[in-house]
Length: 143
Image (cartoon, rainbow, N blue to C red; front, side):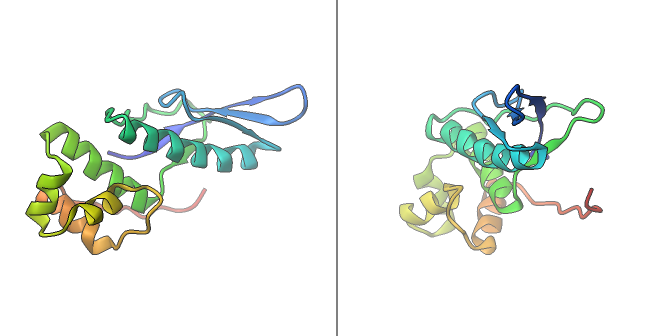
């Protein structure tokens, strides 16, 4: 899945800008200007998606952005963690089972799923492999 969520920006009466993510309504924030609002929107998105994980809810897929609509991208490391979580949910794989299959303990599995933990990429790749998934990297020009 491509974790790029469309953002709707609204100029508020006080001059600040509100950012809403229609696919993740819990990620609602604002900033001094559009750039600042989008920066805060990424933080709000990660907090909201972490909440989805805590509640054992599926990660909502992003819809296609409307013309001219900015997107808020989940950083690559966190995108891998979300993919691992989603695969576990879909396949009904518990943290204990994943740990057994990877040969690691529960604490390490929790770190793999923690969006705030800077997990080693080889651990993430191994978890994806165990779940029958692989990562595909695409590099594009910055906007």
